[in-house]
Amino acid sequence: KPRLTRPSFNVKTFGGLAPLLQMIDDHAQLLKQSEGAINEFIAKQEEKHILQDAKNTALETERKLIEPLLQVDNLSTFLKDIIILENTFNSAYMNNMEQRQRQQKARGICSVRTNIRGYEKNPKPLSVVPSFTVLLAAAPVYIDAFNKWMEKVVSQCQAQNIAIVHKPVVQTKKIARAFYKAFYVYGRGAKHVDDIDGCIQMTDMLRCSLVFDDFDCLYRCYAVIEKLGVILRVKDRFVPDSVPFGYRDLMINVYAPDSKIVAEIQLHHELIYQHKEKSHDIYKTARLFQDEDGKLNMAYAYADQNFRSVVGNKIYHEDNKEDAPLYTRAPTYDLSQLRVKNNRIVNADGTQLTYADLFDAWHLSEHLHAFVIEPGYGKKDEYAHFRIINEIG
Image (cartoon, rainbow, N blue to C red; front, side, top):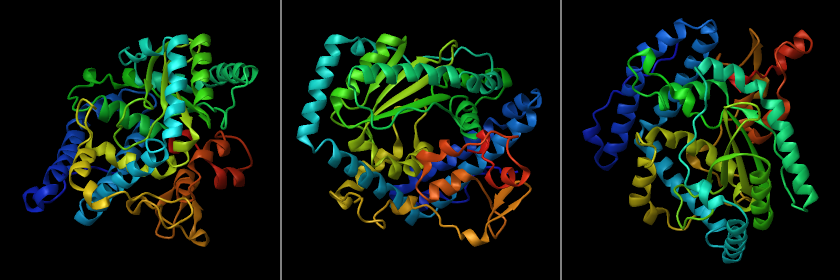
C-alpha cells in the first residue's frame, strides 16, 4: 500500500530552494498526522474497501507528484514552467487590448442587469451532507437532474442567440481526488475521526463547463443562469489585473437541483481555454505548495520572484508539439507492451495504468467523459479492455 514518508534530505543544503523543499517535507508530515483518524473513519464504513482503494490511489498520486520535485533540476524546471504558462495565458488575454475591452464592456452591462457583484461578495458555500460517504453516494444520483437543468440553460441561450462553443456535460469528481481533497486538504491535520468534516467544503463534486468565443455571450449566459437558479457564489477571474498562474474563467457555485450539494459551473473563453491542457499537470503539482488558508501559493510566489527575469516573455506555441511544459510532458506508452491483468491495464513493468493516464498522455483528457462505461455493462472481454470506473477516472 502506498505511503508517504518524509523525504530524506537536509533542506539547508539547497540554498534558495530550501523553503519549497521544506514545504514538501511538511506536507508529507501533515498527511501522516491524519493517518490514524482517516483509518478509523474508513474502518467504520460499509464501503471500507472502496474508501481504502481511494486513499491508496490518492497517496500514490501524491507520491508521484512529490518524488520528481526532490531533484533540484526538476523543481527548477517546474518553477520556470509556472512563469511560461502564465505568460501564455497573459499573451492570449491581458496583452490583447481588443478582447479586454470587450470583456469590460460585457461585464459592465452584466453588472447593471444582474446581481453578479453581490454574489462575488458571498462567502464560500458549504454542502449539507452528514459524511463523505453520503456525498460520494449522493453526487451521481443528481447528475441527471443537473444535466437537465443545464439543458434548460443551453436552451435559453439558444433562444437568445447566445453562442456556446462547447456545451456542458456534468461530471462527478474522481473518487480518489475527492477523498484526498476532503481528508487531506480540508480535513488536514485532523487527529480524531470526529474532527474530519472536509466533505462539507467540497464545492465541485459535481461540475460542468461551458466555453464561449465571445465575452458578450459569456456574460449573457451568466445572466441566464442567475435567472434560472439560486446562485451561491461567483468568482470572476477575468476582472483582476493579475491572476496567479494566469488562468481566467468565471466560476459559479449553485446547489445541484433537488439537493444541498454545492456544484460548480465554469464559464470559459476560448482564447484562454485553448491553452488549458498545458496547465493541468502544473496545477496538480502546484497544489503541494498551497498555504493552509489557500490564499498564497509558495511555488508561484517563489517563481514570480526568482524566475520571471530568467524566463522573460517566453510562451508556449500551439504549432510546435515539442514546445510544451518540460516538467509536465506526458509519458509515452508502448501500446504493444500494454496488457490486461485482473481487469486492469498494466505496462510491461507491471505498472497499473488507467484510461485517464492514457488520455492524459494523448492530450485528450477533456474527452474522457465521452468514453465512460458504467461497470457491469457489456461483454466480459469488452469490459476487461474498456473498463473505466468513476473512482479510477
